[in-house]
Length: 396
Image (cartoon, rainbow, N blue to C red; front, side, top):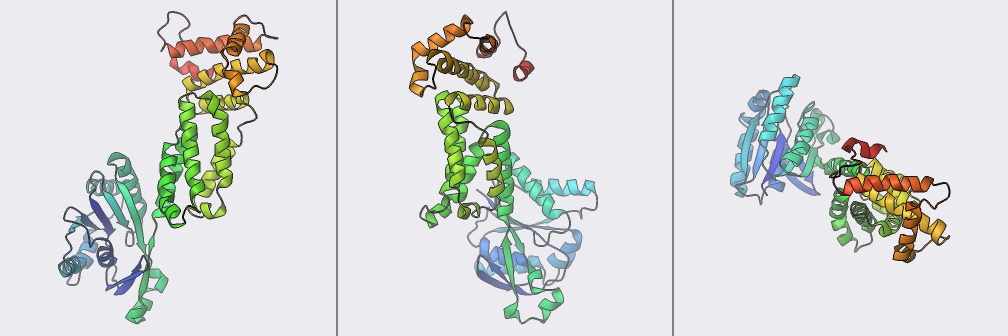
C-alpha cells in the first residue's frame, strides 16, 4: 500500500535541534520534517510521498527561503539516496468556515485509496490538528486508508525559542511523541458503541486481536490474553444471537462475564482507554441472568429488541416460552439442555400452549401472538392474513 507522510509547515523561525524519535537521536535539523523523513522514509519508494502542507505565508518564509525546507529536503534526499517524492500543498489560512471546507477537500484529495498515513501535527496551528484528524477518519471509511501514526515534536519541553537558542546544540533534544493511541481510542469507542447498539462485535474482535498481538508475543502470553479473549467472547455472542443458537446463549454470556473479570490491571494499562469501555460492557452483561436457559434467553430477547434484531428476538422468545412450559408444567423442575431438546418434551409443551391448557392462559395468549409474528416474519410477509407492517414488529 502507498505510504504518505503528511506534515504542516509553520511561519515561525525554527532552531537547529536534535529529535528523539523512538529513542533514537536524529539530526541536528532545523525542521522536524527533516528528522521525520530521515527516520521514517529511508526505505520508501518513488510511489510514496511526503506532503508538506503550507499557507502562502509559511511557503514564503520557510519553504522557498534560502535555507528553507524545500532545499533541506532535497539535500537530505540526495545525501541518503531517498526515493520518496516530496510534494508541496498550499492551502488557505482557515479564517472562515468556507476556507476550512476548502482545506478539508484539498487534504482529502491528496489521499489515495488504501494509503498508509503518517501525520505530523507539530506545526499545524489553530483548528488544523482537529480538521486533519477528521479528514483522516473520513478517509478511513471512504478510501479505506490506515492511520499508521500521529506525531508531535514537543519543542516546548526545552523552553521558549529564546531558551533553546542559548542552549549548547548537544542539549537541544526535542522528544517526538507518538499520539496514535489517542486515535485508536476513537476506533475502540466506535467499535464498542456499534456493538452495544447493533450487537455486532466484529470490530471489537478485530481491534482486540490486533492491539495485543505484539504484547502477547513479547510477554510470552502473560499480558494481553484477557483483552483478546474478551474480543473473541463478544464475537462469539454476536454469532450466537445472529444465528439464534438458543442452547449456547447462557454459556456465551457466562464466558463474557468471566472474560471481563480476567482482565487484570496490567492489561487495562496496556491500552489505557479500554478501562471505561470494558466497564460499559461489564455493566451491560452483568444484567444477564445466567441461572437458567430460560432466563438467559429472555435477557437475550431484550438485547435483540434494543439492537433491533427483531427476527432473532421473535425466534428466541418463541423457543424460550416452550422451555418455560417444559420446566414449569411438563417436568416441573429446571431442565438440563438435553431435556429441553427432547422432542417429546417440546411437543408436549407446544400442545399445552396450542390448546391453552396452562393456568391463567396468559402465557398461551403470548404464545399465539408470538407465533403469528414469527410466521409472518419467516414467510417474509407473503400471507393473506395477519400481515404486519415493518414498523410494527419492534413495538408489540
